[in-house]
Amino acid sequence: MILFKKASELHKWLEIQRKNGKTIGFVPTMGALHKGHLSLVDAAIKANDIALASIFVNPTQFNDPNDFVKYPVTIERDIESLEAAGCNILFLPSVAEIYPEGINSDQSQVYDLGQLERVFEGAYRPGHFQGVCRVVERLTRIVIPHTIFLGQKDYQQCMVIRKLFSLPGQLPVTIIVHPTLREPNGLAMSSRNMRLSAEEREKAAEIYKCFQFIRDHITNSDTSDLLQTATQRLRDNGFKPDYIAIADAQDLSPILTWDGKQPAVILAAAWLGEVRLIDNMPLSEPQA
Ligand code: AMP
Image 1 (spheres, rainbow, N blue to C red):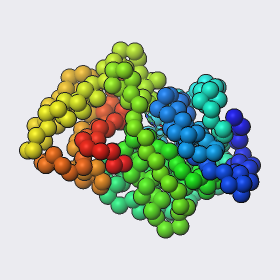
Image 2 (image 1 turned 90 degrees about the vertical axis):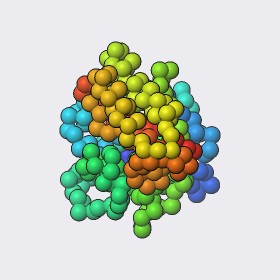
Image 3 (image 1 turned 45 degrees about the horizontal axis):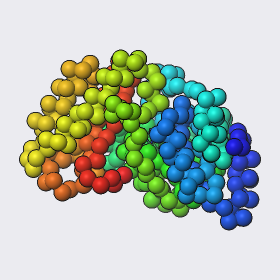
Image 4 (image 1 turned 60 degrees about the horizontal axis):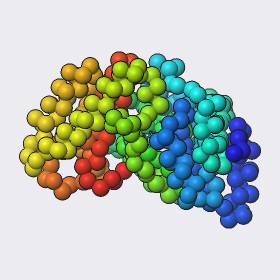
């Protein structure tokens, strides 16, 4: 695996590869890698000549400064995992490399994400998706990938990134979304799980159990009782839920009565101690 820290050097190297007809599959990450990330790297290896992962803890997408400061960093281990997975390139830029003009500049640039920025993560994390778009656009202009690989774990983020690449002036890239990898108890793998105690990691599986409960009990009628029961189950297990909801899989508008056919997704965000966990379960074929 070749490690690049300088955007200009990576860009130049990739330009030569593209001229030689090589395809580039890109997996953007914030590091503290787990098997979920590595499943994306594996998909990029299988589908492309060059699999490139980036590790960059993007300061502009953290609406909560405490979350940024406490974000796990395990670079040495990440490099070993990527090598072992067969990743070809790692891009490990500094903040100055991605934001040479500083992280507070170009705030006037606003991505029109419509409704996506007003619901669920958009509503609970003001500015978060603008920061995601800023970094994804910048990384993409450096890498110019053919394909970007994303995890369905961040369902709304996948929708935001699809929306980003539909906006005028963006590069043409193919987006591939891969299913969420879970721990044996159902907990979605996440870098933030490192901040949970062993006991909390067991409790945290309750989110997935609530999804299964909703999926198994949902009928063609009002969903509010079911959602209330699930919310209470989370509270009983020590969570502070931000939301647990059923939404249209394509535009995330809330579904109060499900007809059993409309593509839908169950979405949840909940605090366990100081850690905010998000997860989702599509109720029909994945759409993200
Ligand atoms: P992050 O490092 O959390 O920004 O995630 C980088 C990429 O990995 C994103 O596309 C995530 O959606 C994806 N990802 C995170 N957790 C998982 C998981 N458990 N299974 C599959 N993909 C994941």
